Length: 198
Image (cartoon, rainbow, N blue to C red; front, side, top):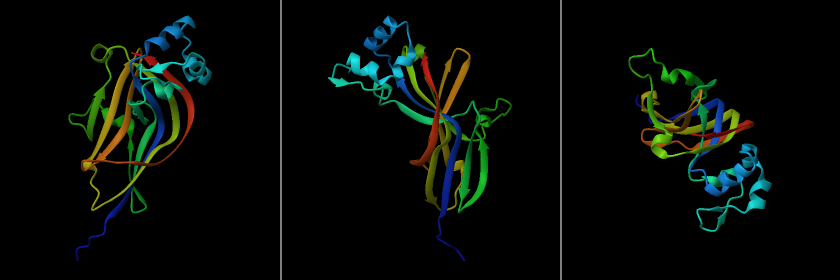
């Protein structure tokens, strides 16, 4: 007997991740940091912005914190190059656990998953400032309903960049059957900062 019952799907993104902004390094902030011997920790000091009254793109809007520097280019996600995993629960039962480090396995002839990758490259984009927090915990929880969940219909959007010896591949967006999944919950602690010029 056919049924129209939908599966309730929960996807948990767990591990080490980042809340980052990416974009041009404002020249006035860069010049002021140059006066301070490039002390990047100042970028996380609210008094640094209050004292200097930096404006965003001459629009008169003030920059109050690192989040305002390139607020249109904010990404939150798990780093595939560190210990992170994705759990898929269907109707209250865990059906699959994916280790994110396996997403880019060079030994495979064909990729295991549907991946869309965007590369941040200074030779294309010019010098870019990457700034934010390192996070640990439940990076994102997605909940949705669908008739018969199919892993092949799940697309993973990844942002990649390299800085000196470190590779970063941030899983920041999930798409299921052409619909971007919304984050329902996150529960993380800040464990560090990230500031990179690439």
